[in-house]
Structures are given as C-alpha cells and as structure tokens.
Length: 627
Image (tube, rainbow, N blue to C red; front, top):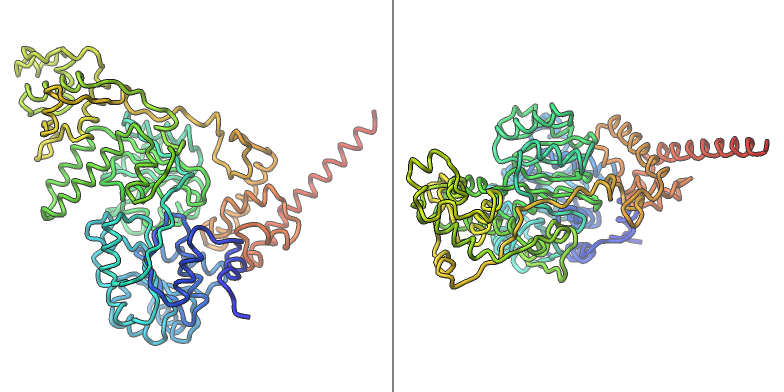
C-alpha cells in the first residue's frame, strides 16, 4: 500500500497530526502544483516540502540561503533516517563528487543548495540528470528588493520555471506583507500557484518594549531576572556595540559570545556552533546572525537598538520560542534610535523610491514602539492577519499605560522647538522647557524665551516620552542631515492652534514587573500548574537529568541537542516516564529512527530512576514497621 503523508509524519518525524494548513500544502504539491507558503517561524514550513519529496519520485531540491543553516537541517534529517545531503564550498572536491554521484544514482531524498550554487550551469546540469520531485525555495522574502534581507542571487531563481517546468515549486517565508507576496510570486514566476497563509501569530512570545536605560546593565538585569542560564539572542546595530556588549555580559558571568560579519570566519563559525550545540549560550549579534536559525529553545530575543522595520523585527523576534514554549521579545529604544536610523537613510546610496519605502518602514516601527494598544494585534494587522481580542501577553496588555490629555504639553514642546529655531535635539529642548541653568541656554539667550521653564508639570523623562510620541505620530521629525535637530511637520500646526487634542501615555515606557515570582523559570508546559508554578518538582528534576543525557549524546554524535529531542519531548518523557519502546514511541517527537538510535539510552535513564525510587520506598516502608 502506498505511503500517505500521515504515515511519514508518524513514522519518520514522530508526530500524530498535522498543524494548520500543512496537510493542504502537502497535498497540493503532491499533485504537482506550485505554491507560496507564509507561516510563522517555527510553524512547520519545512515539513511541507520534505514530506512531498519523500512521497514523489526523485530527490527533492531545497534552496537555502546560509551554509550553516543547510548543514544543521541536513544533520537533523539524517538523524531521522532521511537520505539528505548538501552541496556547498565547505565540502572537499571528492566529497562534492560523492554527493553529485548519489544524486544521479537516486540515492538522495533531499539535496540542499545555496542560490549561488544552484544557478551555476554545472549545477543545473546535475539537477537535470534526474527529475527532481520538488523544488523548495526557503526564506523566499530574500527575492524582494523592498525587503529587509534582499539577496540579489534570489532574482536568478526564476530560471527554475524554464529549466524544470514540470517540477512543483514551493516558496516559503515567515515575513512578507502584501507587497512582498506579490513580488515573490512575480519574481519566482509562480504564476497561478496557490498562496497559503497559515496565520502569523506566535502566542507563546511575550512582546515587551521599554525605554532604554543603561544599555548593557539593562540587558544584564533582564537576562538575570527573567532568563538566567537560558539561550538567547541580543541584537545590536553596530559591530562595535556587539563586541562591547558581549564583553560586558561575559565579564558579568554570562556565557555570551559576539557574532558579526567583521569577525574572523573561523570565530563566527565556532561561536555559532557553540550557540547551537550548547545550552544557555547568549549570542550578541548584528542582523548578520539568525536567518533560518533552527535552535528551538531560544528563550529570549533582546533588541538593544530599534530595527529598521516591522518585517525585520518580526522575523528576528520569531527566532525565540520555536518549540512553542514561553519566550520573550524585549525591545529597548529611545529618541537616539530615530536620529541614527534617519542618518543611515540619508547616507544611503539608494534611489528615492527605495528611500521612501524605508522611511515608511521606520515610521511603522516607531509607531509600534509608542503603542498604547495591544502590540500583537498591530503586528498581525501589518501582515494582513487579524486578532479579534487583545492578546494578554504583551506589555501593553499586562500593564495598560495610563493616558492623559497631552494637548497643552504638546503645544509647549512644539512651541519650544519653534522658538529655539528647530536647530536643537530633544535633550536641549527639554532642558529649556524645565528651566535648566545649562550654560548653553544662557549663551544662546534661550533663557529669555517665553517657553523657558514653562514645563514644570513633567520631569525630563516625561518630556522625552512626549517628544517620542509626537515623533511617532508624525507631528515632529528630525532634520534631513540626521544630526538630531527636531523639526515641526505640517501636522504640528493644528495642535499648536488648538484645533486637535492629543491623548498620550503618561508614564515613560516600562516593561511589566518581573514574572520570575509567578513563573519561576520557563519550563515545558506539561510540568507547570495553572498558576505557572512547578506541578511536580520530581518531574522538573527528571527533566533536567534528561537534558544532561541529551547533551552528552548530542556531543558524542556531533549534533545540536535539539536534533536528539526537543525540550517538549523531554518534558513529556519526564512527566509520563515511559517504561518500554512502545510507550516511548507514543510521545510526540519520537519517530522510529530516533527510537532506534536514542531510545535505549533514555529508557535506561528512566528505568534507573524507577528502580531507585522503588528501593527508596522499600527502605522507608521497612523503617515504618519498627514503630
């Protein structure tokens, strides 16, 4: 009897049911159709092309943008018993020849290639030696010239439509607004291919935005208080800041490593490998790090600088909590972010059309930072998704900001900007408002302005918050030269004339109070009670022992720990304590190949604990009989 997609899902991957629209996409590709799939990071996109490749005749071909990513994916597939390989520059000539021979002989189920390798004539000839079963283009948003991860090589992938016209193609991405979707379909010539949107919501991620205060010390407090000993990513805008923050976190006792394009390649490779293969490593990186990172147990993503737009932000935060367990995305930001981003745009060589698109992205990002309504609803709406009720898992929902009629405060600040000649940054304007005795103010004669000292109702932090919110609403902007001088926009005039009122948040942005007391540590849900506490301390301890075993086995096999089993699978083992192979196979994430390779070790560990518990109980019973 022919195998079905569900058969493969159960026997190879160890899962009982498909999620979302996975089954729909797989059936469409099995029938020979092209498609664009939009699903959140961790939403199971890879299954949608891997399973059709195992069901259709011929090997599947996967275009993957990063060498490290394809190597990790191939290693994970091989542990499942799938005949997978990659072809890239890390292989010696004889190794490349062996992979090519295996492809020609039909001995591969999946072959991974970078776009640069695929479009080479010799590679195209190799792929034509046997008809591929399917062609998948991962991270397909890289085709968009308007996007945040544009890769020019992706534009050449339209050649697949001509050279392999009868082979179904699937383009996958986690971040694409309506404009980018249209561009993907056009550039890759998917024609009438179906567009499958599975929803962008990642309910396990808690979205927080806080005013930047202290930089590295703020990051250190967050990690120690909320995610001690857990893996995370800290994003910084510049290479210098990456190295400075990584060094400071490391000196403070965290296992923190830097990653940026300016580092020696060998150092980058070692640092990325440690992050993937070890538990509790924090990587401090520019956006050069992270595309397609498959590590499922990243418990937090911390932005120390504001991203360029919501698409980049959503993709970067999506690297947290791929296993579906609780994770945090914290963005710290201040007025300086806007000044720096504007300066970067003005220094860019991009054409006017591209600059306008980038400015719109910046405005959307700034508006997101200053929201007084549910952040998740705004994020999902940006991608054409809809959340009917506030999420209850972002800082705005958890600590609703108090708002106030800020019309008069806005008028004071705008008047001060105008009267100081629209030549100064926010910090200086605030000093004038609060009546500072700063020597510069007297030198410029601004102590004689009508706006000098009229801002006593707010402190400096409060005035900075007003300035940020006015910028977010397009009432203020910064100078075109990017030096930070505040400028009035046309939208300022109705406010100054009293023709419109403004409701702003009263307090500066602040993250909700620490959740550590309520959720002592992020543990798999099966081990938590309704209040977020440990349902069973013995199960929690058992879970940690299984993690230690997993790390030992993964190190011996030279693969990341999650390739052995995900945390969720270990959690189920810890809670259910299976005694034999049949019981272990019932646990989600345990397929036949992993059962054969790893099952005995985990069953032995669980059986040893059963025996130990039994001896302890016998000893206790004997003692009780003496009284």
